[in-house]
Length: 497
Image (cartoon, rainbow, N blue to C red):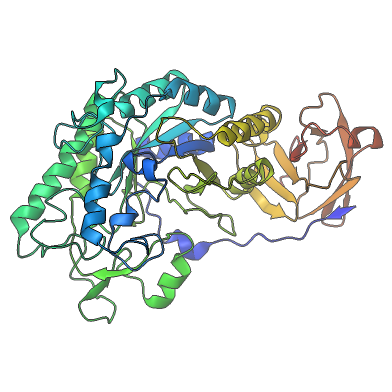
């Protein structure tokens, strides 16, 4: 017998961070995106050749993920890093292979890094030569050199929603890190108030590049903007009592509130006080004139331009009552690693189920390598996830959370036709299905029938014991493990009382 314990707390304090876009079209698009549940994120750039974290090794901050301890001459290191495109030649690049594998895995959307913070563009921008199609880059002669376009086209042909990741800060732009001064941290390295014309040129640069993506790369579904410290600051709002400093993201939060928000908006830090306003409202308006209905994710900047929230490399403890997506690394780092350690297929499937039960989507990251290929293990993981979803996908796609959301090894989702799914997460040593599952706080309708997904015509019995539902699995079905990772019990309807 398996008895699950109830834990269904709401994260009400986080809901204040989400401000819905009032446009009905955007609201509908977000609801459609919530139906997709499972997406692919790819961090890829010239940095993959060194097998290091993307961009951050040139950021002069005292953080574990920034300048490596082995660097003794920062400026020499930065020059060598910025020369990486001169030897970047991913000749085995095959986006159709990726799209096929992702589709077979049950993924429904893709988000690709068109430009990370280091400013190297994986698309054929007209506004800088620091790009994959520059004559200085050996891959520029390849007929598929415009990597972003090739990826978007390949995935779009497989029916995917397509998302463009774009970094708002740009550490290669002379209008962000002005060569006259050394960089001090991740922020703009000059006084914006003293040099407004330089900042305005940077704003123009950002707008120009983003609008290139809106016009030259086909229909897009998501504009995924990173670098939340680049944001407008309302100077009339009282700041925390730290002279000369500001909270780089939510300016209204005191230190106690900030501590509570960190699990859901990672990367908070104190930074030099600058109003890095890139005119987001204007940019979004321009983009939507070209691409009506596009979802915009201005990450970690509370406001109507953050259409959904993005917890990074973690799963929230509770059901979250707003649109959200966990960005999770499959193996290695966000970028390619020469010695990656992978999450198991069991862990990934359980994670997907847990996220969906709590109302979110899973955006799973794979970092392509310097030759343009994925890790072999990435294909293995995707194949096994796909096998599980082909049986249990009805309990994942187009579902919404339903109380009690999760209990012990069980996770709950609800279909739009009122069916409720109880997804039971199997431990590695569980070789048979449990004889009984008891769920507290879930009451099927009196006429409800219950079945196991993947076993048609095999209803199982149930009965109420007080406020608990006891589901009994017949002995002849208990050894029918259609998957060693998880199985789904589907209830036709709940009691409406």
